[in-house]
Image (cartoon, rainbow, N blue to C red; front, side, top):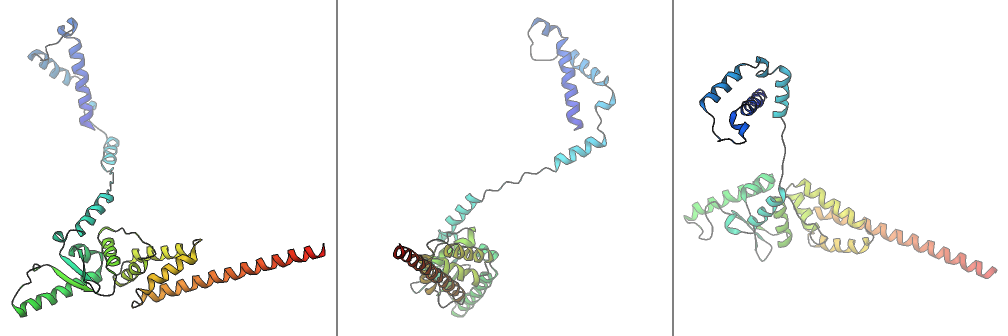
Length: 272
């Protein structure tokens, strides 16, 4: 703050100096200052009182407050798209999951997987130790993978559902639907992804509360049957069955009210 005040003062002196010069009176300037003009400027710098070049405590506190101002900027959309691209490139990944009976490959980055999920970290670490022990015993390396590459078999998931799960682990976004919510929910419980677990249950609740709750409940039930080997599926099936019972109960009540209304109208017509 003190430097800025001293610069303002110098600009004022320069302006006064230029105004009194003979060249300014003629309406033009060469763009260069003479030695005499510089000395006059230096002399004028000594004339102002000392308080122009100093700053009190209030000024210091204001400058400190201005220095502490910080703007936080986040650009997560581009980062998410780049991470999706990395997962789709096997050359950039060091973990391969072979999913389902057909061994569909799903790729991932070891550092991201281990950071986002402690269960995945332990799974990768155990598989890496197992692979190193097998290589040491057979005295040879696989040709298709390097020493740091890890291959893990996954048997209890649909390939597309597991791919969406790994995508969420990497970039934190996923599209939840009636056809993949069961697989994502089971993966969220197994690998300790609490945010995904909450999102899946919220989707199930909203879907069952919808106007087309009956059709949605049947679609969710079909999705859950594909994961009946998971314990989490029992909770999902129980919630769906409860919703189906409530829907059936509402239908019965509506039918009873409709039948009562029709009986009342028939009585009125007979009396007339």
